[in-house]
Amino acid sequence: MRVQLIRDRHFYRRVLTYMLPVALQQAINMGVNMLDTMMLGSFGEIQLSASSLANQFYNFFTIFCMGIIGGASVLASQYWGAGDKDKVRQTFSMAMRLTLVISLIFASLTYLFPARIMRIYTSEAAVIAQGVRYLRITVFIFTMHGLSLVMANLMRTVGHPKLGLIVSIISFVVNIGGNYTFIFGKFGMPRMEIAGAALGTLIARAAEFLTTFIFALKIEKKLSLRFRHLLKAPSGEFYRNYFRIGAPVLVSDALLGLGGNIVSIVLGHMGAAVVAANAICQVIDRLMTVVISGISNASGIIVGHTIGEGHADLALRQGETFYLLSVIFGAVSSVFLLLLGPLTIRMYNLTPETVVITHQLMKAYAVIIFFQAVQSVMTKGVLRGGGDTKFLMMADILFMWIVSIPLGAFVGLVLQGPPWAAILCLRIDFAIKSFWCIRRLLSGKWIHIVEGARRTN
Image (spheres, rainbow, N blue to C red):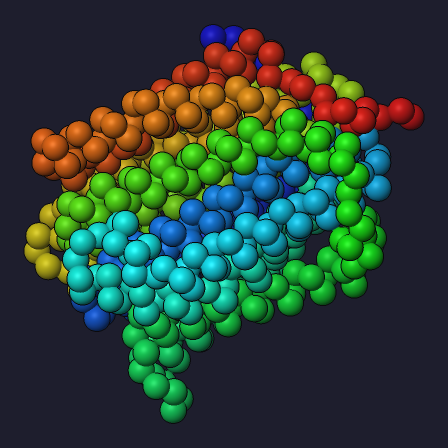
């Protein structure tokens, strides 16, 4: 396979400019999650499992937000590369409106049906009861977090990659302080345990929201986005242009989110020990892939800018370079997970059965993480930045829903196979998509210029 690599140092400096803040932000977020699981883990596996499963529904919401961000980022990056600030502002306004609608829907469902939501993931009454306590507080998080998440991510497309990092640092301090205070009942506050974890998260999300919007609407100068721009409704033609590119992203990410929830359902019905073990492995997995998340984010923005500037040939070379970077960092992440992952198990209060399952799942995740890296950079970065969203939607639908989920459910629930075999089957789509997307990358058919995103000067 002949890959054309970028050798220009300026290109790699640009990659680092976007990659490092995102990687550090992801590391901070995962560090918070790890401390959360450790704090709740001190109360046993029931509360740890309940918070993990309750968060799966919340993660489903964030997947919708990321779908909105994915489609909007394609437009914003290419419009920014073409120098059209007005259309970039319209993109922000549209993304905010879509996010507000989605957040209100999820908040309403959580408020009305918390117990039913938990029963989707598990049949254990004790886990359901604790999960309901958690969900009742998350009702108030959806809108604030959704809007700030979309705003911070879109700000990266106009040259503010550090905003998300700054927001995460503030959230880290607030969240850890809030969780410690309310989970354990410190400083005169009541001991709330799992509900305290939710309350600490709520306070942290409020801090994120205020920080993000004060910067975006009062301080930021490159785009000069103001509240009046968000109030101005984009035209029907603009929405049609967005949904031509963005609708496949929304569908794709929604189905991926639903698929991720089904993965949790399969594991949830294999027992609390499996859920707790997988929750620990997921935290380590995300910590090991922070650099990959940064590369994925950087690749989508840089490729989008390059296409908007009218340099399709350069975008091809950039895509191939990002592919090689994904292979390298995927292999490194896999090795680090094998070496460091088992050491973290000692930090949790687990039964011997759960310890054994966690060690087995760690080894499975070491295989998964390599292909996760490659497909992430391709699907969430390069190909999406090139506007190849319909192809990516088909890849997500076919491989997760026709292969991974049926195979994983069969192995885990019908055959009652070991958890490590079930998780490998449930994530086999990562491997398939890696090879599928590499072929698409090398074909050069993934570059699609957004209507109106062509530099005229």
